[in-house]
Each structure stands twice: as structure tokens, then as C-alpha cells.
Image 1 (cartoon, one colour):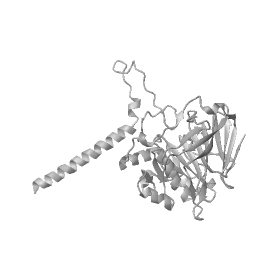
Image 2: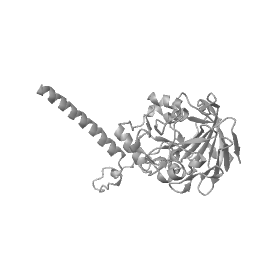
Image 3: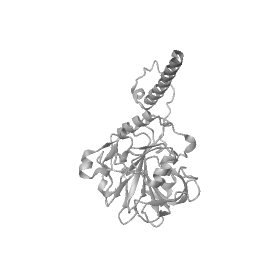
Image 4: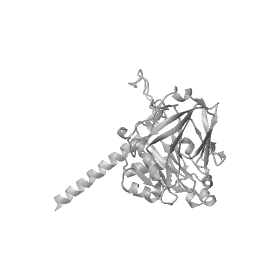
Length: 354
């Protein structure tokens, strides 16, 4: 009997040791302590070698955190007028904006490494087409609740996700927003809380490159031979419009909505983007519910960068695949290195350019 108990105790200790080893490895992976360690040149075996530049696959820019091959995190962001300003969105690598219901849109902000972001929000519910797009980035999906169709997909475990309504230690309610904007517009998180929760949960944090087609970036993008385009506006509905105005000095597009600047309240700044993409597709109401069915297969679109624009084609090879963009001549689209704003709009949406 004692021998049997001894085996059980030994097994438990080995299991605990194994879990602790994984946890410590994950903490070291997300820790920045090695970045600040100074190695004397006499002890540095790489002093005469060129150090590899690690690029952010979402932007083509150098990745400051140096954390290679980690999965991005995709966060659902509230975007109705009452919920403004958003928080931390100016630091997202990619922002997707798509209609949800009642003429409103929602944002999905994707961060390659949000660990240093102190506040991100406010966070809202999931929709099937956002899940589809997040899967195309092999992203960890963050939301609070969701439509019935979204819940069904999430329960099938086809994507790693965190419903923060069930992970209260990964979020909090901003009391100022709760008092002034209402309870549903007050849920926020931080990059550190998300990373800590991912580690505690044992979620895979290394990207699976077989699941992703990475966007190509080049300062000699085809768009620079396009037509001059300093302004672009997308009218999603009678309630919601989004516009982009080119700032020559910065080389970025300043984002506006509701006829005002789209502000990031965490940094008290207007959201800016280096690249703007508009994808046209079929969008239908689901059985009169107001919820949307957004077709994500293939279509036409517009790419804008460097004060120029060109027409493009886009496709997804299957559900959960990455977006693939090409020029009208059939070349793979090269984007200018930098962050991205993607509007997915109905084929009937009014789009103006000048």
C-alpha cells in the first residue's frame, strides 16, 4: 500500500515539476530581461557578426521586442459613438472595421506583441467573420461574449480564445467609463494581463507558420505608381462613416469617424495608419435579426499608401485562411512597411476618393 502511495506522490511531483518548467520557460520567453543585459565585448561571441533584424510580420517593420515567431493577439473593440474614445488602438498593428448590426461597426485590433500596452478597450463581443479573420493570422482571440453563431464556433475549439467575461483576472471595469458611458462600454484589459493569462492557461504562444500566408512589404510598393489619392471615405451606413486623410509630412493617413477625429484616449492622439485597404464584399442580414453574414471568399478592393491608390483583388483560399492581395495585373501586392487599417464594406457601400 505504501509503495502504491509512493508512486502516486512521485507521479504528482513529476507532473508539478513539468508544469512549472513550462511556466518558467513561457515567462522567460515573454520577459525582456535579456534585452537589457549588457555583455562585455570581450565575452560576446557575436561581436563581429551581423545581428539578425527581426521583423514584425504584421507591418514589415523591425520588431522592437525581439520576440520572434510569437502569435499575435486579436481583440474585439467597441466602436459606437457613445463608446469613444477607444483605448490603445493607435498601437495596434492592424485594425479591421466591419459592420455588425444596426448600422454600427466593430473593430478588431491585432497586436503582434501588446505586452507593454497598459490599457486596451473597450472590449466587446465576437462575430463569426472576425473569428475567421483572426484564424487567418493564427491569432489568440479576445472578446466578451458573442452572437449565437460566434458562440457555436468558439465552443468548437477551432481557435484559441479568451472570453474575458469568464477570465476576470484578465480584465477590469474602468470606473470612469462605467460612470459616464455605461457598464457595457467599460470593459478594458492590458497587454500584461493578457500575456499572464495566456501563460497561466498553457495556450500555445508560438505561431504555426503553416497556418499563415504572410503579407509582403516593400518601400517600392506598386501603389507608388498609382493615382494621387489624398482622401478616402467609406460610408458603412447612415450612422457610420470612416475617412482617411493623407498627411504629407508624416506619410500617414489620419483616421476620422462620426465626422470627428478617431481618437485613442490612452495616448490622447488621433489614430494614424501607413496603409489603408478597402475590401468590397457581399453583406446580408441574417433572417431579419440585424446580425450580418459577411462573405469572405474573394472580391475587389482598393489599396492606398503614400498618397496614392490602386485597385486590387483579394481572396481567402478557405475559411480561416489568410487574406491574399494582388494587383489587377496579377502580382502579389507589396505594402509599404507600416501599420494597416482594413475596412470590409458592402459592395453597395458608398466609397469616395479624391
